[in-house]
Image: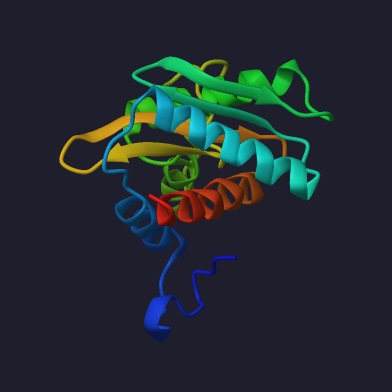
Length: 166
């Protein structure tokens, strides 16, 4: 997946934080309305089903949940994780994984050092900002159910595919 010592794009070594920032800069929508949100959610659902993944999927705009699905193997806990990770993206404007890694890179923990209620905020991978060119972050897209790096990688990979078709 990613490595702090590995080769990034063009053979240049990049850190995980650099890679996460690059993903956010690259994966940008030209517009994002209810129809796009529903299409994105359905795309994620189809991909998760095809891979047999036990994930909960959420797509939101301006705090409104526009798409939500929970596949077999998930529970109400996954809904809570999605909500907590989405609040992190809403607050910081960065992926939940990037926020958590930023704290870890400084030798800190999000839970102890953010001064935010850990029952309401979770800086674990899986929720990504929905950014519209020229506008900024307008929502979130995410999954919960896999280890955090896999949640993040699933969302990023599917966003790459989805945006390539638009």
